[in-house]
Length: 297
Image (cartoon, rainbow, N blue to C red; front, top):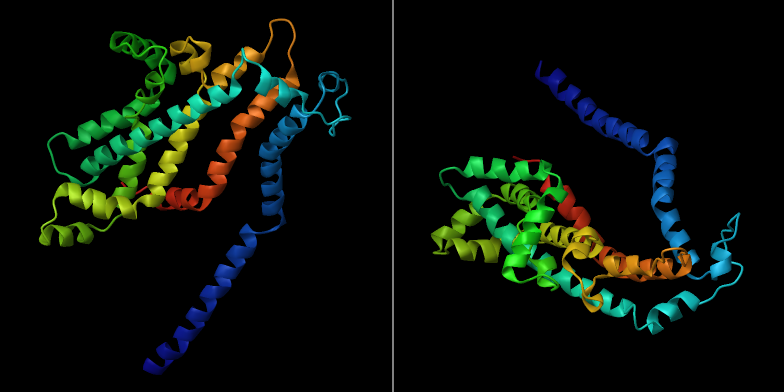
């Protein structure tokens, strides 16, 4: 019996790689790659079309039927944007950069502390608080427009970038996202630090946050993109042309009776460049943060 068992084990071990290879071939077959190409085309083609339109002439952009390659490559739209004093696109871009960066930092500070408390600390009502936070994810965003507007008015923050930075800094998604990551960190690391005399703040800043760097970068990028692309809220709280952000400012480039598509696409191109650079530079951390945050509850 012992000899039969020992002879059967290698067959079981050898069968496992075969099943893995078949599974790999199944997921990486022709249909998989065709689907990936189609999915990539859905996202990439509009971006390429935006870039090409920004270099078209006004008459070329209104031609029917449209051609893929511009008949004449011109920088007219970009010259108009950079020389127009009534539409300071570069100032709008700077406002967006300041607001989005400050908002992302504030989100990381608030969400990391709240998530660590919900993931590690024991206190009465912790489950109820977490359930309420998760419940706010299902509330439509526009419901908070009027209360937040009234709050900004009472604080005297209307027509300032602070009105774009502070609201939403304690969003439920950031707390939930980091809490899931913190739950996956072994408690032994914190227990060892406690034995060495570290307090809660030291454990959070010196142990937990360095380990959670992929999740923090992911949340920071998502918060930056959300604030950078936000259109409705800046239109509500910003009134002066020099304080507008890029999405709100670009909407003013569209005329009431005629639309200069190359100018609008040139502005959208300027708005997309920082986002693409940010994602390309931090792509590895974003994928790792999403993959390791998991669904552990």
